[in-house]
Length: 359
Image (cartoon, rainbow, N blue to C red; front, side):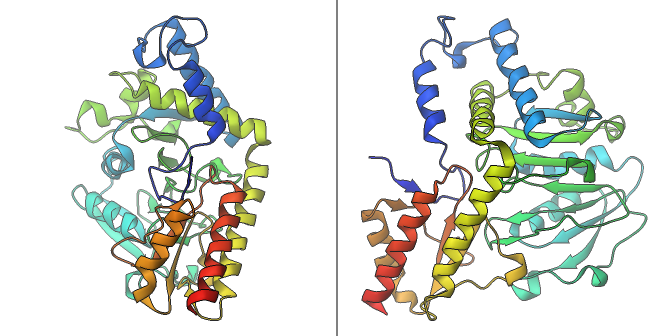
């Protein structure tokens, strides 16, 4: 029996995608080969890769002057690739620190340049963001980097920051969850293992005027220009993860695209927050209402001694991977695109019953 998996990543995949992958596992469309066995230079695989990019471009309405890359190394490798490629002779960058992943990005960028933290949410335990007028931005910065959704603390920007320098975003846990104006960004990157596909693949969307001046001495593999010139195939790419991502893109298109996905995700988040807020203090979410995440919803119980009992009961009900991150504690429900509304309803029903029994 399949369970409802609330993991922050690797996360659950659409069942329809898994069924298609299962059907094609041994023999992809009469080729006599599994996709895992194909040469990335062969015509069969090239067709898979090209279709995946075309579908992603359609879903996000990616402008023609942006390149799309399918890379390895996770979002964490992008923490280095971004400054190595986008400094372009500068030594100054701006970062917003709004969670653990922002903090990691800041630490990596400091190896290559001078980092100005324009706003820091750590003092308030990453529960809100200072108003835009209070940010200490540097007009000389090569770019401003931020994380639109922080998976651990459940803090999310619901608008795109207005800044005067190129904008870079780590969208690992929010990409494809709703419509997005790509043209407002210089570069977007995202690890696949939340809303796109299995771990091992990283998507990069970068404006093509920013890809020609990698820092001297940078590893060849960490050059956007190199990856663009080789169509993400300078070396063997994560072929099977790329294929699964392509199936997810088609699944999204068949559902009605990102407008429909956004409506579904908003309903799911509102349903879960309503259960938390309506529990008369039994459950709590600490994040500022204006920054509550649609994707990752942490919550605590008034009596933390009930945590283990809650988790065991939830698992028995087919609701798994609900333990919060060790730095936050409590619970965390990650409800990415592939989590159906029925899964959130099942969680809400369990939470309501648990509160009645233990409250």
